[in-house]
Image: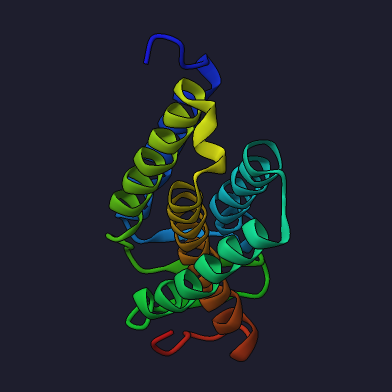
Length: 166
């Protein structure tokens, strides 16, 4: 952990603040809701390119993980409510108690894989390690994408009104 760059800890602090904020209902925007999925997508793409050479097999494993995660993320918000304020373009969303634990577990898993690869770079050619890393990375990324898509869909369905259960 002593060799971990400062920016990694900054990301962790950012994720914790986002997770804690999500535990309270409040106003937000689709742009703000897109930050976490974009962050984990970028991190996944970086890992894919720099750790596994972006082979077709690696892409396939990552994308399978994303697809599975998207389905789970979609389901996690099945009881959420959303109110769209057309005048300001903001969304009122119900509290999301799943975000903080998901962010912490996702960070811990991705951090663990990155540390393992830094300590033992030869793991990138181990098929089992690569599959676990890419499937889990994709699944966690997919969860955040699925949740975002659920919010996006709901915001597009009923203009300027209280959204039904998402």
